[in-house]
Structures are given as C-alpha cells and as structure tokens.
Length: 30
Image (cartoon, rainbow, N blue to C red; front, side, top):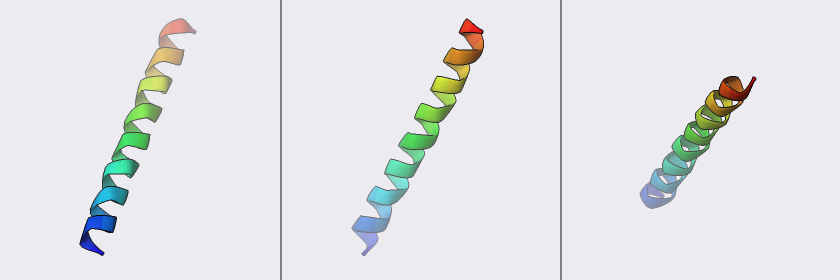
C-alpha cells in the first residue's frame, strides 16, 4: 500500500509538472 501510494504521488506530481510546462509553453507562443 505504501509503495502504491508513493508511486501514485510521484505520478500525480509528474502530471502537474507536465501541465505547468505545457501552460508555460502555450503562453510563450501565444
């Protein structure tokens, strides 16, 4: 359970990070 929760947290952080990068990239282009 701890490992699963840890992996989920890492994946969630990764998704949030990608979202921020995409938003920044789109703002730079726009």
